[in-house]
Length: 224
Ligand SMILES: [Zn+2]
Image 1 (cartoon, rainbow, N blue to C red):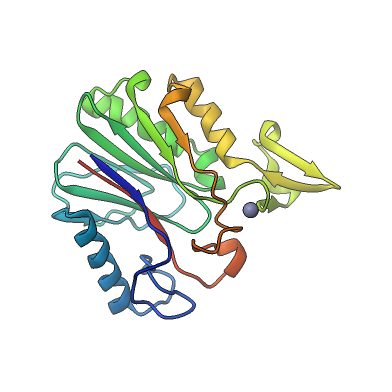
Image 2: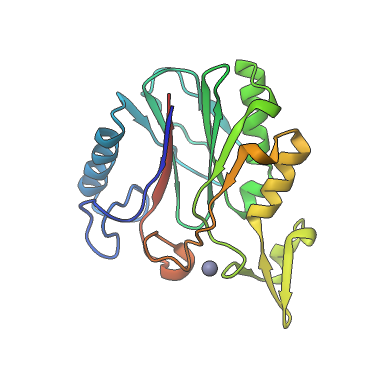
């Protein structure tokens, strides 16, 4: 198994997508994005690298050939040599690994996906499909926007009452802690979870929609 979170470097896209933009939906030159995806695939040494058309849903697709291009926000597989990619620019890229049953998954968890429990549903889908046990699952949450920068309007705080930081009537969400708590409630062991402390909005090595609006997407990738 290998897993990796990309940065914005070592690709071919031009500003404001410079340079390893992996998103085809952000109005970058499609040839550049295709080349960037090829660069990442080469680096990983996988035969197929699957990207999703992400729509902030809780739809999960089981990948079997590696030729799928699903519209969904999570994927799982137990096929060797197929890389699963989740694109982000502030949302949490979540990676899953079950060493015992040799299975992997990815999920795209922004505010909406988090409320839909897309991460928890992905873990449960691995249980149903591959026999994964929650206490044996390993989970990584990659670089994403943290509470230092994730200010939202009051209407967007619903459901996050316990993961909210209020500073002078401004509301800041802690998506990472919400997901961590939800995973623990599901039976995932805290010692099996790794949360990146990189805030994408603070760290210019990563694309950030909040910071730059017109920008690229980096990715979390995992492969058996
Ligand atoms: Zn920040």
